[in-house]
Amino acid sequence: MDLGIPTSFSLAQNYPNPFNPVTKINYQLSEDSHIKIEVYDVMGKLVKILVNEFQSPGFKSIKWNGENFENQ
Image (tube, rainbow, N blue to C red; front, side, top):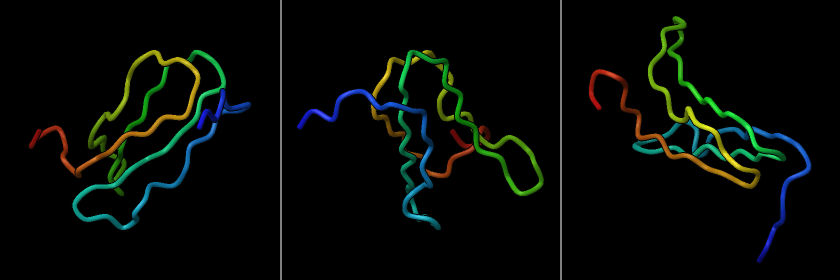
């Protein structure tokens, strides 16, 4: 099934939330874009950079297993 190119940018809630041991984040891009998805803790400290790259339009997803910079 071809869903085509999205008409707008969207970032969905991660699922499942809360997660154990993995969560999935869906997002969609309507045009070529530099994407940066970061995870922060409740104190505002950067935990992990999940995506930091130029991407083409489409429906995307990234999985995160809870690892941070110290335990990768």
